[in-house]
Image 1 (cartoon, chains in turn blue, purple):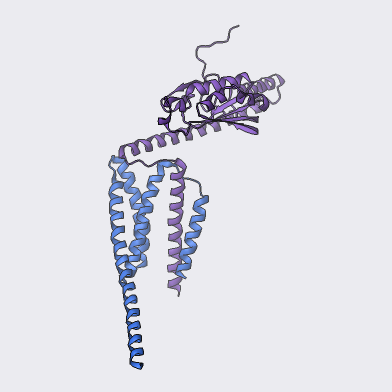
Image 2 (tube, chains in turn blue, yellow; image 1 turned 135 degrees about the vertical axis):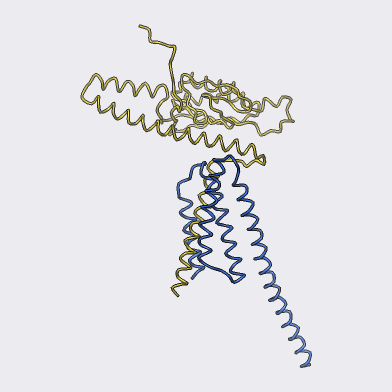
Length: 133
Length: 238
């Protein structure tokens, strides 16, 4: 059910995004930083699922809150003539890498386990067949 | 169960928002046609230029709207007066002539692009490029052949148009225009197609292996001049 909802959301978003009017170039940098923030939240969410401390409330508020905060900081940076968005990109992308590493480790471990189990089974079968002989 | 429904709904909405944002962003970046440079300073400058261009476009749209309103007002006020109506028609014809309205009709499309030959294979690499002089000659010949409206890469040729060399681009109407040059003109297609005759200018260009193509078309739209024509010094003589 959750996967279906995610799939429907993605397809709907892509379809509407293809047909939606283009935003002006002035605002595209804000949207870019918001997308990075949102992506960071998504990877963070996946990591927390793996670590089994996933909380929907925190996930949702992080998703929208981070995006909005990043946009506001970018605007503030432009007003102050400091490129705050660079800091935001560094933080978000850095966290994305950390989270991706955690996700990778988890799945690599999992697959290795499965692989070794299969190996063990084959060995047992071999031994059984030898004993039968 | 309810909790699961809520979770899936929330996740669906979030995925929707994320993909929507990504798609819009990709389309915007594609639309502005920017080649991302590694130079930070250059990127900033380009962003600034784009921002100014956008502002200009917005202002121009406002101007267009105001002009349309003016037209409407003029039509309203000249409704019941035949003398004024005549003047109104005169203005419309005049605008068409000096290139302040979009026009459509039959004509030809000439495409000039730089040669694909290797520049080290010829004595003078300059001959492989399309120059301002080439554009000028083509436009001149077309005018002689009776072209009524001409545009080069959507820059309308008006009485105040200048065509000059600007380095690796060509200045037309003060705007930068780059190769390939698509020159559209409206007129009698058979007559305009004489440009590609034996010994004509296009053949001369092809001799230098510049790519010159001429295509007849029954439906060409030429956009109007986007600048403002001002006459400060010329006064009507009585």
